[in-house]
Amino acid sequence: MARLACAGNPRFRVDDRECRREGASYTVDSLLELRGELGNEIPLCLLMGVDAYLALTTWSRWERLFELAHLVIAHRPGFELDTGDLPAALAEQTSARLLREPPLLQARPAGGVLAVDIPPLDISGTAIRAALREGRSARYLLPDSVLDYIGQNHLYKGFDAG
Image 1 (tube, rainbow, N blue to C red):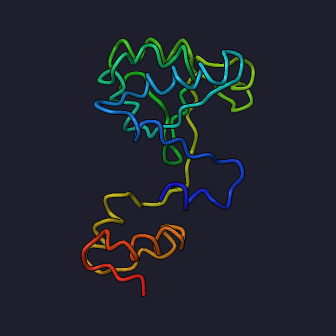
Image 2: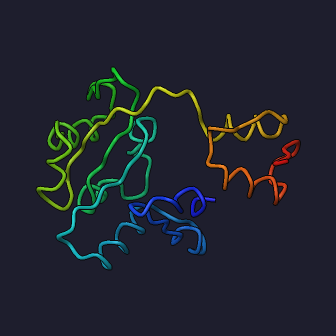
């Protein structure tokens, strides 16, 4: 479905290495593999929601993430990344690495933390799946190609692509 969603945009490439990996899959391992393929000079960004960033210290080898990529935190407009809300170790890393402007991500291959606004849409994968299970429309929340795939493959009870 990710391939279908990105098909019309040449700037996106779906990487399925975590789906192919046997056993537990960790972001740090994927970034290590990407660095091995891309080299150490190309800027690489890991985009995550603010909720994931707040829990980053629970991730496997989370400190290494800063060596491998920039961390770009997507949040709702008006949100300020407050280090007082973070675990001490993450607050320290964030304070030392915080960038204020996206072009600064190009200056080095990894190590920055940038918070960016996302449109204030109250949608989530959980809510979309629930709507489809209940037979409600998810049109405009997903590309038509993804909705067609879900309907054709009967992925959610109650959903009919027709």
